[in-house]
Length: 253
Image 1: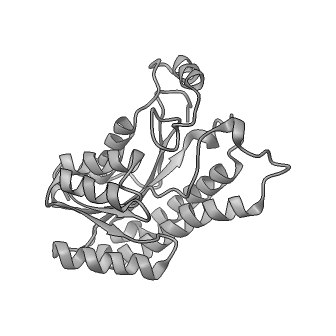
Image 2 (image 1 turned 90 degrees about the horizontal axis):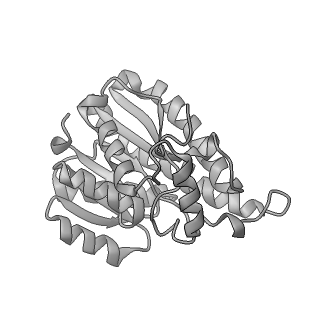
């Protein structure tokens, strides 16, 4: 199914990387549902900017009932089901390694918050989306991960652990849903220049990361968003259960 034939949900799609993904999909002609939790003004402004094929709907991805209501609203407004989901929503988090607690002092509540956002949020959207996808024999799930699995250079213990669990779910779900024509993949970025979450990162860190990459640059949200669009496109129809790292070549494998 071409992108301009798809209705795509982008969770956390109003700001930062989510907004870049929303713009990339709208550029390719997809109908896009911008999911937001608290960022109503940003979501509605982005929907107005991108036109009638983009709508903004509120839902807490950690609440299955709220997610189900969003899917019903999207179907009512677009007249067609959501056939692709980008799980991008991120619980409140700032990428500032100097301010993050070390492993011997971090509270479990931080882990629970990230697990609920990344893992529970994905389960809720996936379970809401699969019935229509299965009926159509077509579906696309893209989960947003991190290159910190392979390169744990900063103590984001809670964030990285939750994303690692999401990678495992990506692979088990890909195996489970493949016979139904549904692919499940992950796109993992590194430090992005710049999102709300990475705005607290010192400029010296951006420069250091850029110098370590073969491309001598820090990946932008727009560059990562284009890879998400690839996984939703027919070009990726034979790819599932994969984790593609998009960080300018900093991390290998």
